[in-house]
Length: 275
Image (cartoon, rainbow, N blue to C red; front, side, top):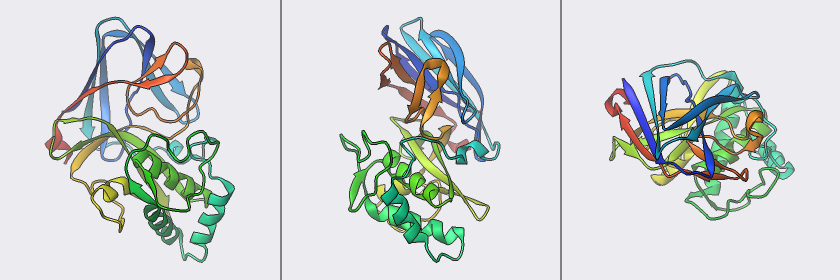
């Protein structure tokens, strides 16, 4: 069995909200155990995914997910257009994407053009202010821009959907080969369905390895991954949450309604089984 343990210190001014886990054709969650707080499950009705709200009752909260190899097909809801500022293409961006794919012989060729264009726009890196921060839609980029995997994939999703190419956004944990048993942050990647064919894309990892000719692949960077959720712009009516950017890991929802990332200790057992 493959297991993922996530632990964190508690605080008294917030509740913790965490994804339940996501089944993909590669790996699927089979159980989730939680210690350190009272729990209830809430749902995003637009995408059919659940999350768990944990009210701290101890000094620490711990999660243990167990996974098996192989799972369900990618969910249809992942490819559904969501009315979110994180994936809604601005008029200029949509027009540019239509120009890029004009004359393509089929969807697969159009997708390859978009991937190449998006790759050329980005230099991998983290910034204090993201290029779409505070905007109601994904803006058109006109020059080289520094961005993380989150930023790159949000732009790719918006570009694909602007021309009718089905694309889904997946978040989870990536455990690099050099660590094997731990990681420090979440990762995200994109799944497309063009001409009825599923393909997985990780432009961010290609750029981290200084590779700009992008091919569909999950692991251009050596390591393994487990998916936790899909889609940007999450809504949880029972938590009074609208258009939450991501729910990829346990996060604190503060009493004033704002969100903070939790400081997590992330441990994996079963690296070789995931290869």
